[in-house]
Image 1 (cartoon, helix red, strand yellow):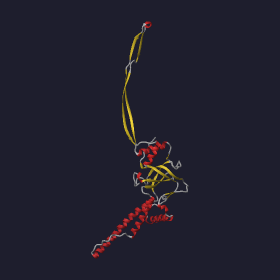
Image 2 (cartoon, rainbow, N blue to C red; image 1 turned 90 degrees about the horizontal axis):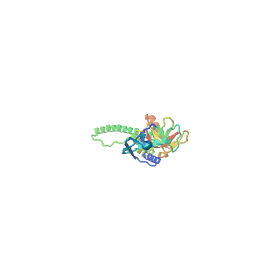
Image 3 (cartoon, rainbow, N blue to C red; image 1 turned 90 degrees about the vertical axis):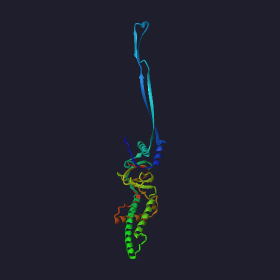
Image 4 (cartoon, rainbow, N blue to C red; image 1 turned 180 degrees about the horizontal axis):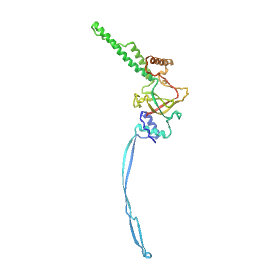
Length: 313
């Protein structure tokens, strides 16, 4: 059997330990391994004998040959003890091998229909939350624009102050004030930050995994504490495998969708406001040529929601 060596970039150690301890009725992270070697040395003595009988057999001489003696064995034993330590990665291998050997891990979304509660290994490209990603990109662009406008205003104010100093002979000490465009930019940025922090709760991140050989997508919420790289630069827009349990399955043709705003305050906004936000984003993209994706609040079927245990290559 070929060993699939995994490189985990996300690992929920608490869930992994609970599941493995349940399967094995408890286990230890450190095992004591004892080995014993025995060496033996044998020696054997043998000999022969002749004797004559009396009475009627006195004319016959009987001869006997064979091993007449004893054998001795000398032995020595050597005992060695060592500690074998398990890492979380090795325990992940252990639990995954158990699920595969028992036929409990679904590895093909095409051949099987995922059931709620079943273990699944879902491969695909990890994409950021399609709703918050659009606003976060716009926030970053506005910050650059704000800096550029600030530099331009400072140059203008410097030239103006130099002229006034030349006329009056006194330096101008008025602090630079924000322009109207800067105030509007800051107000928009503050609003967008409020929206994104409300949708993406602190300590968690939502990602969407796109399966490459089917139309399926998976929605996964990960805890930042279990990520190897909390900025998620390592995992976003790259192909990994998600290992976890199916929490919801919406096959093709289902009348429902996964709402990415379901647990946020933004979900209470009237649909007109969300529609206005989306249309405003589209207008900005069309007018400025900015590379910003259209925000999406729904992931349509076929889609599954997964409670993740690990993300690995």
